[in-house]
Length: 78
Image 1: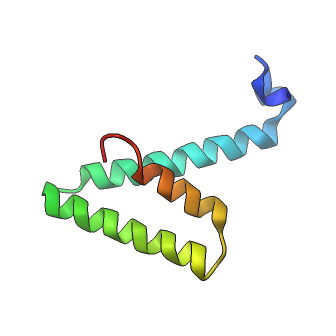
Image 2: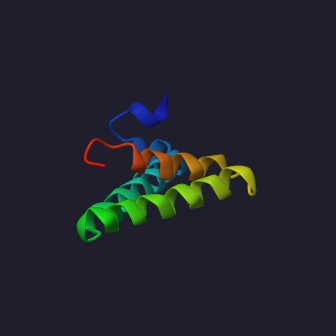
């Protein structure tokens, strides 16, 4: 598998772009929640992301972005 090799960016650039995008969105979700002021702010931010995730899944059937958001919501600091 090309994406597990040392020169993966050259051998599998499309796969690596997808991986980077997934990580960026997940980290953005986590950072947005953790930067929210106070526990009520964090709760509100998490709630908004849950509503977005639900809409992505049920209305748009966008499973990839749904999992990106859920991944950001399930990290240990959250």
